[in-house]
Image 1 (spheres, chains in turn red, orange, purple, brown):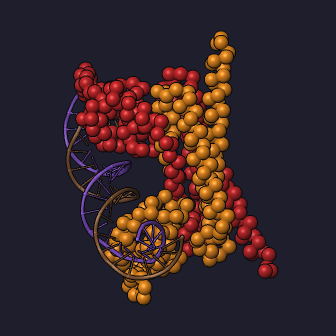
Image 2 (cartoon, chains in turn brown, yellow, purple, cyan):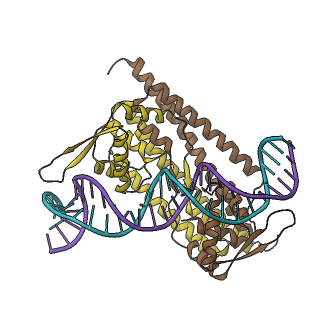
Image 3 (tube, rainbow over the protein chains, first blue to last red):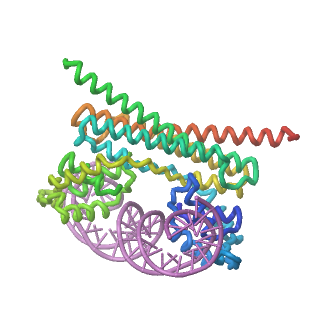
Length: 188
Length: 188
DNA sequence: CAAAGCATGTAAGCAGTTACATGATTGT
DNA sequence: ACAATCATGTAACTGCTTACATGCTTTG
């Protein structure tokens, strides 16, 4: 996947400027792209060169001119082709798990502290996501199906966070258990 | 995070050659790096230039010479500093969710089909992971704590897959429900 | 005999981030 | 007064992947 298809997808919803697309990608929870304009602008230029989108410069009274991009039939074709292509497995990259993996250098307290900080980080993110979900969010709703799918996509992210939070708590509890048995047990 | 710390982590376990580290990263489930040697070899050279590791070329009878890398005290320092640094939230990038998000172009059958293929992909991956977990895997076990944590890290990945699988099934069921109500219900 | 494993390395490129540059307008 | 929003763009960089090159040994 690349940002190309995310942008084509957006334009299949409605014409937009680079600025608008950038903002949307930046604070859409399912988009892992940072609020980084460069890639958006350069990709739009590229899509235009390939004839998948059209551009029109629109003058405004009080603000700078905007370049409105609209998707072309060939853009729809390209998008449709990608949409039905083989779904990829989600890619989960967790720096924290790598930290834990090589945590043998650390004392028990450090590890427990790390797990605690991770837990609070997850809780914070979950709260934020729930708040964003509570006030109905940006995004198209052209059909009941689309509204349903957008809600579900949001829920997937939250479910993943909940699972990881549960995991973190159980892991910390397991560590306490391990320590108790090692310290007090005495034998074997 | 970068591969630097993963490599330093490995070397904090035992001295190794680039080849060995590459293989480990390639088929370790918690490492998102591809089985791609370039980065490993160049990073090792870099770590050596910075004095965090030592190199020693070891001749072998039947195989090419290997360059054995070992971690230095300064490497341990750098690693320890990273280990206690703020845990980052896991990064979940799902191309499939983007596909669903812009799936309004597709018919119901296409979407259901896509969800089905995604489900089978997840099931396959889960089966593979369970199999790998069943036969005790590679990795250090220098203390009960380390063994416990490595097991837990593996379980986190599987839990994430299970959550996503559950989500996929519920989403497909939800779609059927939606269709039933729209098609047969007639009114409102 | 071919494929896979052992072992190191280089070249070229894609994807994505940070930081910089410009300049008017609106909100605190 | 300062920051944020609107709006586009460039330069430089990191992180990571694909593909290529070499050559011997073991396994199927």
